[in-house]
Each structure stands twice: as C-alpha cells, then as structure tokens.
Image (cartoon, rainbow, N blue to C red; front, side, top):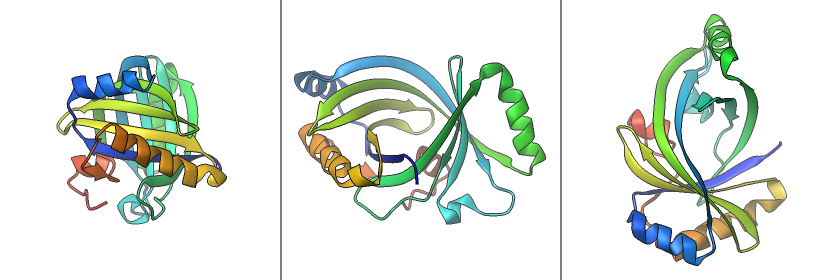
Amino acid sequence: MGQLEVELKFAAADRAALEQRLRSLAAQPVGICSQADEYFAHPARDFAVTDEALRVRAEGARRVLTYKGPKAAAAVKIREEVEANFAADQEAALKRILLQLGFNSVAVVSKTRQSWALEYSGQQLKVEVDDVERLGSFVEIEVVTDAAGVAAAEAAILGLARELQLSRASRASYLALLLGQAGD
C-alpha cells in the first residue's frame, strides 16, 4: 500500500473566526482555486458498496486522475490514494477511454477551495475551506502519510479540530453527501 490520505471533514464554521485561529497557529494561506471533480462508476462493481472512488479533477490547467480505496475503520477517514497527473488537453481522451471501458460518469462535485498549510503536533497538515455547490461550506483537515504515520496523523487532526473549535465531523465524501448517501 502506498500513500494514505488521513482526513476529517466538518460542517461550516464561522470563517472569520476560523481564519483568525489558523493565523494564531502560524498557518500559511496557500491559495484559492476552483475544482471540478467528476466521479465515475465501475462497470462491474458498485463503488458505493466497495467504498472506492475514481475521479478526474480539473483545477485550472491541472488535471488529476485519482483512485481512492476503501475507508479504514477509525475516527477519521483513512484510505489509500493513488494519483496520476495529466495534461488538460488529454482530458477528453482519458474520459473517452473510461467510457469505452464501461465506466459511467456519476456526478460532478464543484467547489471553491481555500487552502492553508501548517505544522501541528509534528505533522504537516492541510486545512481546506470548501464552498461546495449544492452542499454548502465545509472544512477538511488532511495529512498524507504512510501506514506507520497514521496514528500520529489521526491524533494531530483531532487535536487541531479541537483547537479550531470545529464540530459536526463527517467521514462522508462530498459525492456521498451530494447523492444523499451520507451514512458514512
């Protein structure tokens, strides 16, 4: 298993207060971008059952094909993430290949993302403040690590969430929320 994405999502918070708390912790604003994530369904297995995801992300001129493995049982969302970058002018061909192989486009999740970076409890954390079309505002705290670093990443995420006064945590993906399948 390669890199693991360890994250937790929270319902909207008071943005001004959140930014003030982030700055007090020496978090650095990284930037604001628009993202459109198109999710695909596998032709022979139900990703909702296997808890996997395949998406194509468009962010400016950047394109990324991402596979997300099943979530591990934990207080935070832990899953394998494999990404491949490709050129924007190859997007149509990649999607055509997926469709020819029997994959189907399920939905597009569009959002504006403000990113922050900080070191907290010995971990390099990303805090993403997302305004998601048709869903509202969310805050994600994320660490990418290997299997040996999962416990420390989870502790850092939960600690930072407390310090940022975030509540109403969810392990559900934006896709699951959009499709009304937010059981977990």
